Image 1 (cartoon, rainbow, N blue to C red):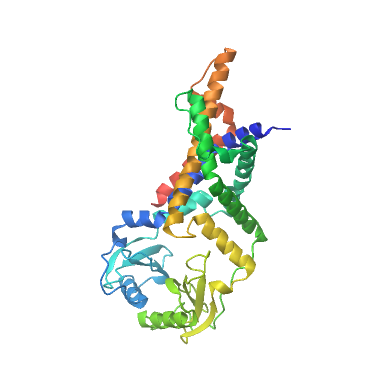
Image 2: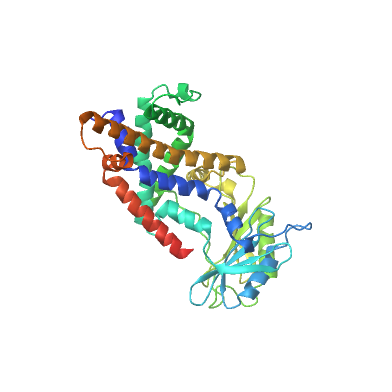
Length: 394
C-alpha cells in the first residue's frame, strides 16, 4: 500500500502542470471583467451625473448600428465606468458586440464577440473547446487534487502550527523550498477545500446528477421572427419595468432575447438573496402581447438548486464581492505557487539522489520531468494546444 508521502508526491507531480494551468486561468478569471475593461477602449465610458439611462435606449442605439443583425444578449455591467454591451447575431451566424454609453446613449464601438473573460473561462473549464468530455476531464482533476491534499494533511498532521512558522532561509535550498511549500499549503487549505468540493459538484452535474434547472415558459409564436415587428427600446423598457414590479429590489443586469419564434424575453438580475449569481432572479415576458408570463425569484429556489447556485458563487469567489475576489486571486495564485514549489522540491531531491548514487545527473528540471512521468507532458501538450486555439480567437 502506498504511503501518504508517495501518494502526495506522485499525484502532485503527475498533475502539476495541469493544476498550475487551471490555477492561473481560474485566478485571472476572477477579474476578467476588469481585464476586458482595460483592454477594450469601447468598454470604457465617463460616468455622468444623471446616472445611467434606460436599457431601451442602449438597445435602440445598438440595433440601429447593426440593423441586419438579431439581438441576442444585452448586458449592463455594475461598474459606473462600463458601457452597456449588446451581442447580436448576423445573418451569416457570426456574432458581434456593440458597445453603448449608458449615460449618453451613443455607440462607443463594435467588434467581434470575443472577450478576455470568455477566453479565460473556456481555457479554465474546457481548454478552449466546447466538448463536454473535456469539461468532465477538467472537473475530474478535483479528485486527484483532493487525494493530494488529504495525503499532505496526513503528512503534516499538526498543520495548524505552521501558519506563522518562518521558513528557513539560511539552511539548504531544499529545506527553504519545503518550508515555503508547507507555509503556502496551510494558508491555502481553506481555498483548496472549497475549490475541490465545488469542482466535484460541477463534475456530478456534468454526469447528470445535478438538480433540474428552471425552465422558461413557451409562448405562442406570433410570427416567423424571434421578435415582433416594431419591438424597440420602449418595448424593452416596458418589459423591464414589469419585471421590476414583480420582483421588488431586483437590479437588472442582463436581458436575453429569443433566438427563435415562440420564445420569451428573459430579464435577469440580482436582489438581496445571498450566495446566488447576479443573474439568479429572472422574469420571462411574451413579446407578442408585452405581458409578464412567469418569474423565478432567487429566494424561491428549491434546496438543491440553491445549493448549486451557492457552489458557483463560492467557486468563482464572488460571495462577498471585491474582498472575496481579491482572496480568490491570492489563493489561486498560491495554488499555482504550490505546484511550482513542489516541482522545484522534486528537482532538488532527485538531483541529490543521483549524485549520491553516482549516476549521471540531468538538470534539475530534467529530473523533475523524468520523475513526473507522462502526466506533465500530457498537461503541457493540452495547455499549448488550448493557448493556440485561444490565440486564434482573439
